Image (tube, rainbow, N blue to C red; front, side, top):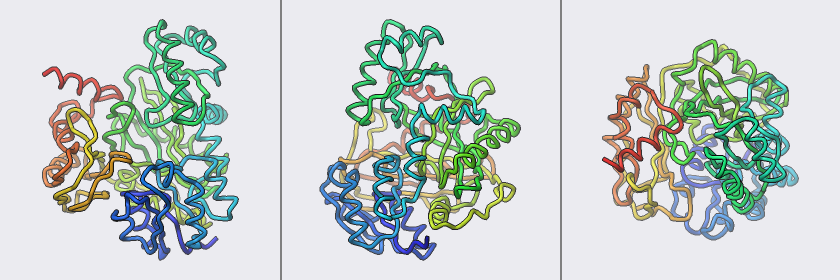
Length: 448
C-alpha cells in the first residue's frame, strides 16, 4: 500500500527520529502529544499535531482509543509505534489492523508469538537455535521449585511478557525461591498485565549480544550485532556495535540460522534477537519485535536508515538489499543519557537552562532537549542518546571521550559524568565486562 501520512504514537527523541525519516521519504507526519508535551520538539517539527490526553501515559500514549481516534481524525494511513508504550502490544497492533490502518511493524500475530518469551523459545528450537535451559509455563511456585532443583541453582524467574528489567528475579539460594516467585507473579499481574511465569538456568556473568534483522515478510537480511552488556538493573546503559567477542565463524553460523527462522515464519519489519554469550556459545533469550533504542549504532556501522527501511517494508516495497551488500564499517558506541543523579540515580526532571550538543563528524545526538525545555516527570528518564563512531573501537572511544566533554546540559542532573568515569576504567577501555559488571563497579564506587 502507498503510505501518504504516518501518525507517530510516541514522543521525544524517537518521535523526532521518525519525523526525519518521513521527511526523507516525502511522507507527511502527525505528532500526537499529551498536555505535558505541548512544547516538545516532535510537536514543533511534525507536519500536523493532535493532543490525545493528559500527562499520565495511560490517558495518552498508552491509550489505544485516543491514538486510533487521532489517526482517523487526521486521515493517517499508518501508525508508527516507536519503542516503549504500545510498540509491542499485540492487542494494539490488532486494533490498528482492524481499522484498516497500517501498523509499521510485524503483524499482531508475530508480536504475540515472538514477543512472548515461552512461545519464542519454542519457535527457536524448531530452527536449531540454542536456547537457555528452562521450563514451560509454570502453574505454581512448587512446580517451578522442582524444575529449578533439576537444572540446578542459580535460576532466573521470568514473566513471559516482561522486559526492561520488569518481571525478573534471580534466585541464588533455594530458600528464597517461593518468595521471589510471588514477587514476579505480583509484578507480572500488576505491571505487565499477565501472570505467566517460567524459570531458566541463570548463566553467570555472560555478555549480552543481540542481532538486528530486517525482513519484508519473504526475504530477510541481518545487520550484524550489538553488545549491550553494560546494564544497571537489567536496563541497558551503553551499547556498541559490533561485538568484540564474536568470531566471524560464530557470527556467520548464528545469523544464517536467524535469517532462516525469520523467513520461515514470514516476519515483516525490523526485529532484534537478544542472546547471552558465554564460553563461546550464544543462547537465545528473547526477541524484541520493534525498533530498539540502540538501533543507532547499527545505522552507524552499516550506513542504513532503519526507520526508512521499516516504512518501505510497511509500504509493500520488496527488500532490494542483498546480504553481501551490507558491509560492516568501523565501530559505534551509544551512551543513554538520562535525567538522573549520576551517583544515586534519583530522577531529576526540571528546566534545561542550557543545551549545547557535541558537534563534529564523529558524534551524533538524538535528543528531545533544547534550551528552556522542561523535562517532564511522567515519562522515561532517557533524554538524549550520544553516539560516537570511529574506524576502530579505540578511535571510537577517543571520539566518544571528546564528544562527552563538548556536550553541555545544564539545569537538571544527568548521567554524562557517569560515562566519563566509565571511559577512564581499564575494563571498559579493554571491552572486558559482562552484564553484572556495571552494578558491581557502581557498588565499589560507593565504598571508595
